[in-house]
Length: 157
Image (cartoon, rainbow, N blue to C red):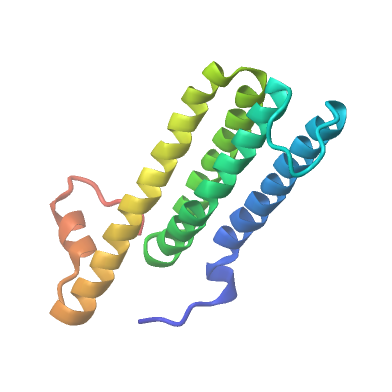
């Protein structure tokens, strides 16, 4: 096993900071809706656009632990560059989800489905990376090498 260097984890760190920034922007948007429609905390009901913004922000908060966990495990055990790209797509889809939901709740599903797809990819890759690590350590079996040996091309490692 090799030691992890800071340069190895810079990509998931960038995505994590961008995700935190995005979440802050969503909270700010909810606050603006609150002020615009004079909805005083702790009220969570009122103008429909406020309720949609609040729900979109809360959904993002609910998914954040799952996203960050999958992102970091994928980056550490599978590939940090691939997890970075998937993380960017996830954050873009999350932005589209928020904007669509605030506009019209019916428009939220396509970007939501893209978010879920990106999470699924991160989770599958995480499981593959963990499996590779365990098989190599405890069985001396290199799953990646075996899979790559049967492919008609040599993918980048």
